Length: 137
Length: 137
Length: 137
Image (cartoon, chains in turn blue, brown, yellow):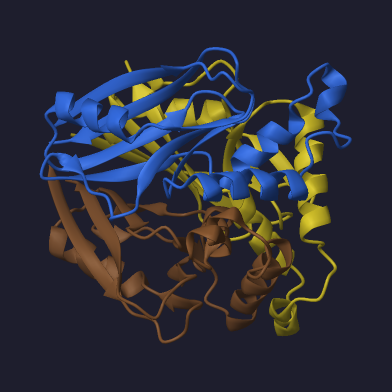
């Protein structure tokens, strides 16, 4: 059995931003030497999500617009009584799905044609980490 | 360590359809010979989700009704400016949860009484694949 | 390769309740002897979710308030024609994310500063189980 752990660091310019990380995940898999297994991609922060979907800017803006409509950033939240203003960011990351586990076959990410891996930052402009854990053989 | 990868193919008659795949996943586990481990079930298409919930038709219609109410199919989406009309399908699959990882114990899917595995197709009527990856020993 | 399976039992006093289970998961990892691997934490019931987010009571009340606003418990659902009244609980668990897979590094849960693991019960007051499956080496 082989395992490898990498910590990607991201620091987005905007508070809310979507960053493609497929290549960084693929690189970690290559370095692991794993031929058959899985890779967990988990944001280590709780106002961000890792999402597999389309690399299409229009869709990305649709996601953000829907999240704002369903759970408005400036609505009234008890979490924001603590001095934070990011309650909606915590909720959005749950609605988008938090994390993913992806397959590794023949030494590579086993993706469908349009599957790309993204980091959805909902409270950025500071250093964040995404953990990539490969296990397999 | 043992691994096995299977690609289920599905081609739904309706554009939006829910298909139970528990037995296909169980079969892949049996073929893998894995006694203790996990199985990743991941749609290779980005307008579909794999969901664990109840095998009850009323609930399935409730899911679809809620998704349409929260994110209407025919609303205005930037993704649909590309010539597609399936922006809502991409968003629904995120809200429903994208994928699952399930436990294997004593050579079998270790399910609670009511847990069943479903493929939620949100843009069907063409051939789609679901990847089933077993790892364990 | 090493694996270990634990079944946590929970019986919440309230129908809807959020219970922190980070320590129970950490204990299972210690008992497994796994140094590098992953842990799947999966509710065996379909009206509950396992969620990683902040240990902050205000945010927890925000989650519940948003779920009730988006998918009201007492609205009209076909699932409730079966004699149940918990259709919304099934839907909420999907919106919150169902399950998580977390990394194990150097024999410990590899968590970010604020990551805590919670069981979100949406139909409690009876015995429920959460499966914890460790795999690694």
